[in-house]
Length: 40
Image 1 (cartoon, rainbow, N blue to C red):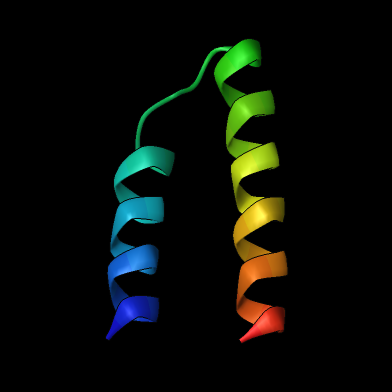
Image 2: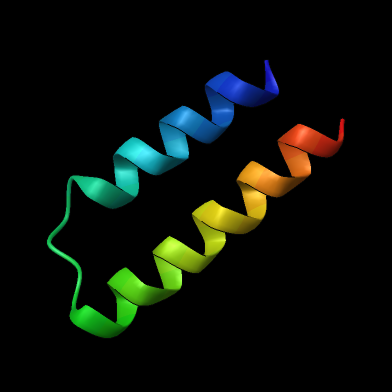
């Protein structure tokens, strides 16, 4: 269920055109979420 929520949030974010700063922040967030998922 958590993964589906994450996908939904990601799709909501990526349907908008992010600024370069927002894009960098999203990339960092995505990387940190990937690390959390691997640790579980």
